[in-house]
Amino acid sequence: MDTKKRTLISCAMLADEVNHILQQTGIKLPVIWVERGLHSTPEKLNRILQHYIDALQDQDEILLTFGLCGNGTAGLVSKHTQLRLPRFDDCINQLLCKQPRTKRKQTETDTIYLTRGWTLDKEAILQQYKILSRQYEPGMRDMILQTMYNGYHTLSVINTGCFPLTPVEKYADQAAACLNFTRTTVSGNISVLEHLICDMEDANILTLAPGEPITASLFEL
Image 1 (cartoon, helix red, strand yellow):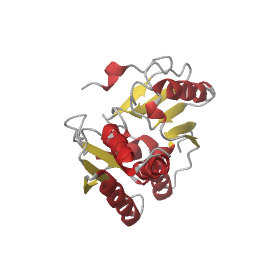
Image 2 (tube, helix red, strand yellow; image 1 turned 180 degrees about the horizontal axis):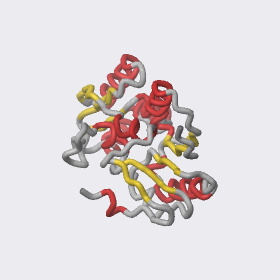
Image 3 (tube, rainbow, N blue to C red; image 1 turned 30 degrees about the horizontal axis):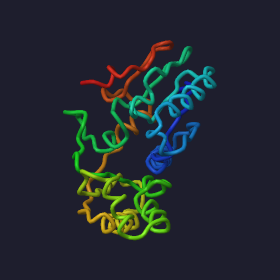
Image 4 (cartoon, rainbow, N blue to C red; image 1 turned 135 degrees about the vertical axis):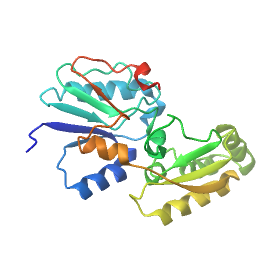
């Protein structure tokens, strides 16, 4: 029987996926949830993650669901415990990756991706639309949105199989209408998260020895 002491530090954006895996596998794994949206402030994300890592030095292994996240994990180090995390730029790349991985980025540059977790963010598209609608006339609101989402043309739901799809697609349809975008649904993949949580070997997971810092070069092909 595995008696390894492990704790998972996860972005709340992946709560549906993490909880699904824990329920399906029956694994009892302590989880520390970090608020969603911190990828936009990588320095703050880095400080919060290092704080939690430092507080978990009595563990045998610390797991992160975060990838590089805009360098938000670069420089993190666990002095006395092993550290494992997905070898991806961010969770979108991770959820779109099919095994075996043939390339790190599998996203379309003109597409905004979302799962149910993204729809709950205070800065999600419909939430922004409603706030701007209260603050500005329609013409100014639309100009601001066009500036914010310049270069994007498609809104795509990632179906990870871990949340009810219909309400998320309805949200995406409404958001796409506000931006005059095309809306699609693509299949997702949670195998890397599964392997991380289930303590399985995976070339898409970085394993760092105690005292070894996370560096951006580790995420390169």
